[in-house]
Image (cartoon, rainbow, N blue to C red; front, side, top):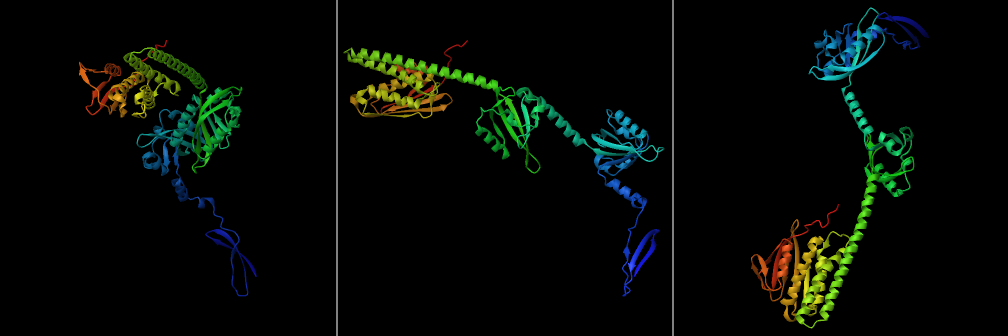
Length: 502
C-alpha cells in the first residue's frame, strides 16, 4: 500500500512515501533532498575558512584606503601580522613611483560599483624590501557602500622572469649571430633580425617553413644525415655548411645546434646559432693558395740550390781527377763532402712536406752514408749509429750543424782508423730544454788530440769544428776515454729574419 506524507524537520519541509507490506515493514524513501537556504550554507565560519585557505592576500579597504581586513596569507607573503596592518592606510606601503597610478585605479573601483579593477605595483614587505603584487578589486554591496574587496598575488618571480626573458629576447634580436628556433621536424618557429638581413627571407616568409629553404646542393647529404642523427639523440651538433640565400647567392655558416628538452627530457625544439664566415673562408682560401704558391717557390729554390751545389761538387770532382798531388786530391775530396752536407739539407727540404724544419735523424743517417761512400777504405769496415729521434732543425741551425757533423765524421774516418781499421761511430742528439741541445759524439778509434787555448779548441782538424760550434752559440767538451768522445752543448732553431718584407 502506497502512503504519502509531509513532515517538517527544523522548519524544513520533507515529503516521504513508503509502501506497506504484509509484514508491516515500512521502507521510507526521501523524494526530495533538503533544500538549505544560501545563508545557511555560506555561513560566516565558512567564509572565514575560505578566506584563510586562500594562498592569495584578501583585503578589504574603505573609501580612503584604510585597511579593514587582511587574510592570514598576509604573513607568509609580506611578513606582517594582519593586526599590524588593520587601521593603516594601504597606500603608505605602495612604492612611491607606483602610488599615484594605484590610487587612480582605486578611485575607478570606488566610482564604478561591480567593475573589476586590475593593477600591478610594488608593495613594501615587513623587512623593507619590495615585492610585485597583482591585485584585482571591486566595490561590493549597494551604492552607499564605499568598500573594496581586493585579491592580491605575489608576482615578483614572474616579473623577474619576464624581465630576464625581455633581456634575452633583446639580446637575441640584436645579436650579430643568426638565431633560428625550430620544432623537432625542422619547422621554423622563430628567427631573429640577423637571419633576415643575411638570408633575405623576411620573418613572415621564414616562420612556418622548413630550414631546408637554405639548403644548397654544395653540401653533401651525409653532412645533413650526421646533423639530424646527432641532434635527435639529444646531442649538440657543430659544423660548417654552405647555404644559399633567397637571391641564390651562396654563403658559409659556422653552426651550433642544441636540443631543447621539457621537464620529461623530451626534445621539443632545436636552437641554432649561426655565424656568417663567408669572408673568413675567402681570406683563408686566398692565404691557402698563397702558401701553396710560396711552398712551390721555396721547393723550386731549394731544388735549384741543390743542383747548383751539385755543379760545385762536380767541378771539385773534375779538379780532383786532374791533379796528381795526393794531399791536394784529399783536400778537394773534403771540400766536396762539405758541399754535399749542405746540398743534402736542401734535398731534404725539397722532398719534405714541411719546408720549415728538417728531420735530423734522417739527415744524419743520409750524411753518414754519403761520407762512408766517399771514404772507400772504410765503406765496409765502419758502422755508424745515430740516435736523434723526433728532433727537427730549421735551416738556420741545420746548415752549421750539418757541417759540424761532416767535420767530426771526416776527422774520425781520416785520422782515427788508420789503414782501414774496423770501428764504430755513435752520434746522439738530445733535447735538454727549449732550444737547448746536447750532441754526444764518440768513436772507437785511436783518439784525437784536444787542447784549448784562449777558450778555443786547437789541434789537428779542429779549427773548423770550433768555428761551427761558436756559430751555434755552443761549447765543446772533450771526454777522456779510449777513442774520441765529445759533448757539444748548443742553441738551436734561433730563427733570424733573412728578408725584410715591405
